Image (cartoon, rainbow, N blue to C red; front, top):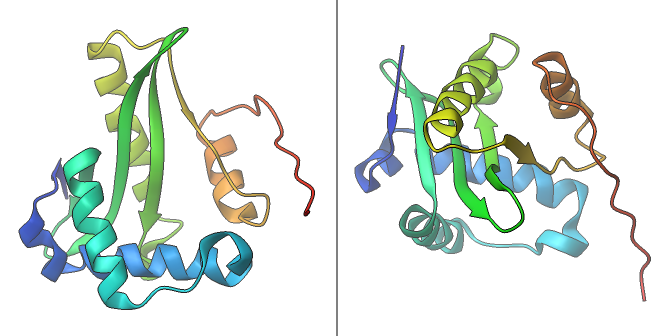
Length: 146
């Protein structure tokens, strides 16, 4: 099992499928926020994100998961996790933890004070995993429809 930077060629080795899987999960829970997109639109979104964000993939013969991140440097320097998706077939096997641990190394090397992310309230499995590997709740975002 290795972790490496993603390349555009990885779209055909399960990266695009994982991206679609992650999007569909979020869309099904919050269609009002995510809006329906075709697979072609999601492929274009992923290609744009590959140009803007840092993507690491976890793979052996196929990609098991990915994590996308960037560095924010406003008040404090932090490493921000934009997305973490593990293939449904491989969840609860420690792959998310492996990717987060790699980001913690990167954050230290980049002189970041911490690693942060947002987690939707409907995504309780992800929240449990993040809490299990050491994240603590920092704040709560509330909303009201207009």
